[in-house]
Length: 184
Image (cartoon, helix red, strand yellow):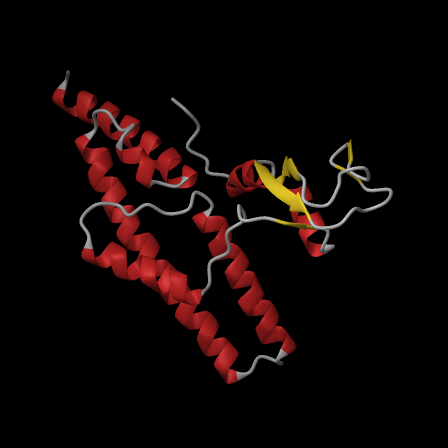
């Protein structure tokens, strides 16, 4: 059986190395990134790079992209609202949990800059509650899916990579446990 140890860093590494398309907004002399010489890439040309490299270009204002998604507090609130109202798992961006960590980090950073104002502390607490509720609802749905067993491929389209990892292991574990109990 696969390891049951969960390591979020593996998912974060895979996410940071996924390829994204960026469009160069200006030529940049002596630009070497991700082992590629981009100094001769003209303005307006598309280039595929790992996400981490694309983020460097975006911060330097030499490229733009539509492929990198960021979520704000309202987006997370809408996600919770949909999860509460629907029996089925709702489709999320595959990097949902990474985006949640990034938003939490930015809220904490903002709070530190504001010398931990009451509003910023309240905002962090509200986001933690919102995220915890979302995770709890999704976990409940994933456990139900795992209990049913069977073919998971279609159902897993609505799961993030982390959730699919969990669902596969839960399904195997519950199946083995059931066989042991029922003597199949």
